[in-house]
Length: 167
Image (tube, rainbow, N blue to C red):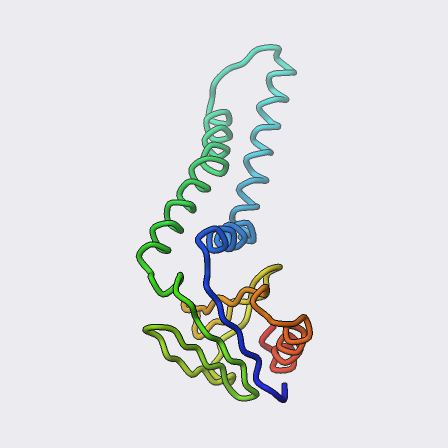
């Protein structure tokens, strides 16, 4: 990366919501729970087909409860939490300038002026539409790929992060 790569980012709620659901759907715990709920549902269907009757028991309660939690409660909680956090954290919605240099990342917005050296980057996660650049385990800067001026800039930054073993 010889010349700095500059981006101007202004996040919309819909983008932030999509990112949060994308993170949720990458969770092993969620997929394990989905698998377990379908196993319990399969056991319920098998019992109904074998006995030609329906008896409500622990398997039925657990299976239906887990399905309701996974497909209704968890998405609703994720939406409400994301909406609340986006509303409370004004810096998410304000324009932010990112500049990627050989040795550092410069991040500037109305109330935020950060210089993050590459050696201090904890890790980078790449999603289909985003980079999440972690300063530590809990703090990440969100960089949408659509904000790159050219595909070459995106490729240059990705290759640079791979060389630094951050991706």
